[in-house]
Length: 232
Image (cartoon, rainbow, N blue to C red; front, top):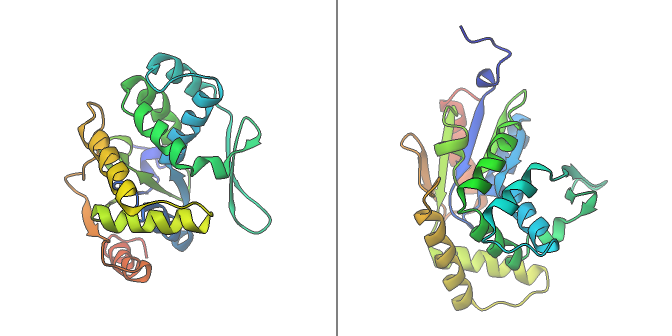
């Protein structure tokens, strides 16, 4: 018999999909709407990438990076204004986390089974009361296969490139749409074709194409799904 104190009794909502589809925005909205904990799994891989870069370890050194992952000192918090702040070994790396270079290294090292296994339990440890919203690429297919509600967000490459260009522009970084499209397509190919935990929608996931939807329209659809699945 399953005890109600066991992790399986704690509800989980997963939000999977490729980069630039709005996973983080939707996951943050759900977590605030339900007052659930949140896991940004992509941030863990980016933190591993930063740690590897700072130590001069290449993205192909799977065993060294996996060993590194076990000892990372990570903290997810907020500043006085409520903005997310992430520290690695007591150093604020919030800005570095979102750099394109960091994402590229994270995408490369995430294909290694040893690295994914090293971070698997760390991700599952985020499952705490009253519940968890987890976003990433394999949350519903590998990490939380028993999630009560699984969402898979998708969007065409150009729509995602335009969103990324706006984000970079807001940070004072100029980028060409064509270059971003190439980078995004290449990252999609790595994610979808990797041997372990490839990017795909879980069989029981509900897919939402966000290409032509506003944030409010996506939230409206998710609100309906939350009600149908007994969260509201």
